[in-house]
Length: 122
Image (tube, rainbow, N blue to C red; front, side, top):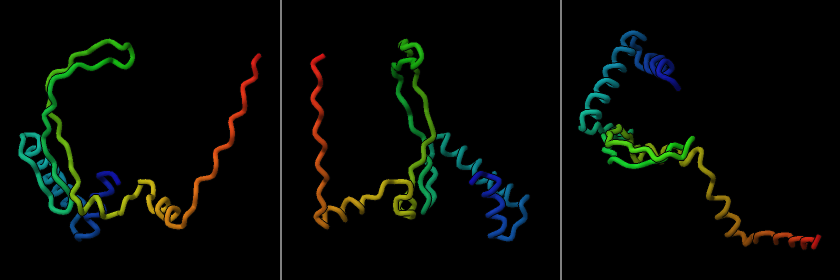
């Protein structure tokens, strides 16, 4: 879902016009960016926390040339999802662990690996 789709969805849910919903969403996003970027965390219950993370200076490598590059200290805005949000979809996009547990509980064993063919001495 992109921003336009989100605006339309909220407008349909609330009965507000698209114009009013756009203004409200832009105000919320602006407040999040302003406060999280200035070092104040923004906590939205049930969603998560936006916070500023300070990155120390470090030496890295240019992946194209392999040359060492010095990167100065910086700050980035990060987001940490709440526990409710992380568990709301019960792991969508993650491999299911229950299948392994079911196989172990049923006593299923791994199939034997095929024997390696000997290399010819040529």
